[in-house]
Length: 269
Ligand SMILES: [Zn+2]
Image (cartoon, rainbow, N blue to C red):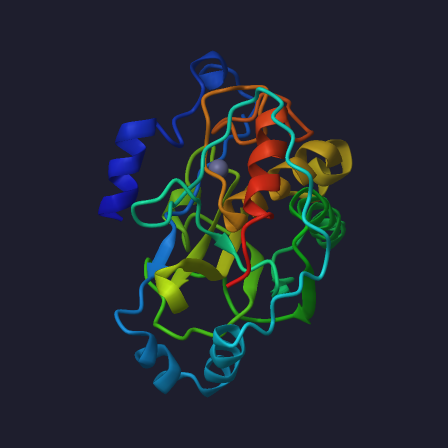
């Protein structure tokens, strides 16, 4: 949490917008969970701990497993603002998911408002279209979205998307509508890739009433959190969906689109 606090101090994450602080209506703000970085010091550690990734890593080393499930999106420089959560070491290349592997995900329906899972379905489809990354549903689960800052090396669990309260995730206190992020591991050739992640959506915000009355905003929040999962960070530009505070933006902005296209166009692991 120290790291999150530092980021909060640096970027003012999660601060309620001044203009809406005095109004009784809840404002919809976003914040990001700190990226969970589990870095393998040695590739062999990952291999030793994880037989299934051994097979996969060997395939990668010999140049197999290098086919995308969807075509890479075209990158258009649209003049918007975007920022990546994590960069490769000593590089201007961002950390993203391996585009030659599907991003597996599960939904925990506990606490879901009516229509909540449909919001997730639509947001997943939109993030997939924007990145050219394949998302593969593995159904529902009773597992919780990640709570730790680090995941063990070789963690093999899908992205978990669910609903939660501030009692479980203190970051959700106040006006924060959701948290999301990815966890990266270091793979062969020293490159980092996200391997899992999580999204926790605030049950105070995602009420049946809100989902019925403001479905586009609610969907946009889920999309924002999924953009964190694939590697986008906040920007100080209200026209972008990755602004820390949503001021009615329901679509991806030009910077969001360019950033997501870049994250989806990285080389395969
Ligand atoms: Zn955010």
